[in-house]
Length: 322
Image (cartoon, rainbow, N blue to C red):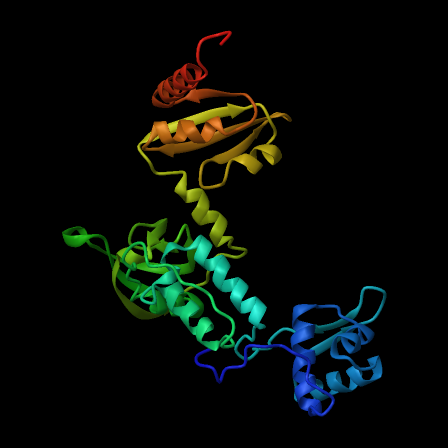
């Protein structure tokens, strides 16, 4: 989506537009709304349902796998195996994407950042009268010069040899790269280390070198990469924590993110939180936000931090009867 020549709107072509142009818009509508009927497609295109069927026929003549399902819940959908052209955004979609990213990613204002570079391309494609103010970068961009090679290795399921670490403490590993995830403004590589015979979560900005190897591998079936990486954030720290919460896991998960603890059911109405931390004072503040009672089963450092927090809050309330 580089430059102003790139199409960034999804307006419906006028009556003078060619059937092919309308067929391409129909393809985008079918992709965005699987199960759309011919009448619904015609309404979105500003034509009759019969005309919409002709546009679907044009797509099929171009050997695009447009499937139709009969019945009350049927309609058109894009079949498997279709590789669509580069994405197209409306001006509102592009501006909304930019603003949402700026709010959630500190490096988005820096063109040297991966996300910032992508946003710059979107901004250059917006109409001249659509203005989005970019804040000044708050910190240096994190280097991700090896991100493209890791993404390519994940896509091709090919082994890589990486040099990983900081300064003189780098180590060499042979990895099965499963997925790359952006979380908390950092890129992470979820992988299986053949050198360590263990699953690893690596920070991409600490990857010093990547060499693609000829051997391929089979990734795990039904891999939830984001969940796996988030759960890893609560493990591996020096202080072990176990907390019993007086609520079922379905409720506790609303207050406790996966990155804070693993949740296990205890009977029907309680939940065990299992985690590790290096900062019991910080963890005590996170627990204080849970709106139900809980008990620390393991973690003397956490108990002390909670007692200190409770004393400070009680002191802040002032003398009784004031």
